[in-house]
Image (cartoon, rainbow, N blue to C red):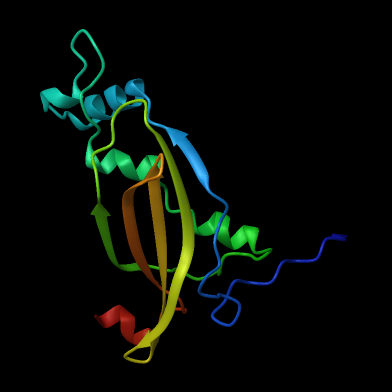
Length: 155
């Protein structure tokens, strides 16, 4: 018998704009840049450390250092993630400056908004990230926040 109560689901009624996760800090490691460019076969010489450190950070890799932590935010609210698929329907990344190897990136994931469009429910997540006190990026990520419908299979 399980004595622990099942946490409530972070459904439409529980999700609140302004819910946020504590900041996360990650250092951009040159060896991770090297692993990334090797796997991706990225030939850009800025990212390949000849006899020194790489001279930049590939943009897709920046998302690893400023991650979207939706499930962690939901858990921090004492809730369970919904049991249905929550497909991404839109996302945008604004990069305000170029990060450098060795930078420490501090980021915060938050639920920015809930909205209904064409009778469907959506949530918008934000990741804001800084290096020192300077903005690095803003990621906006939108998920459908309701179970799929039968007509979705024919779209």
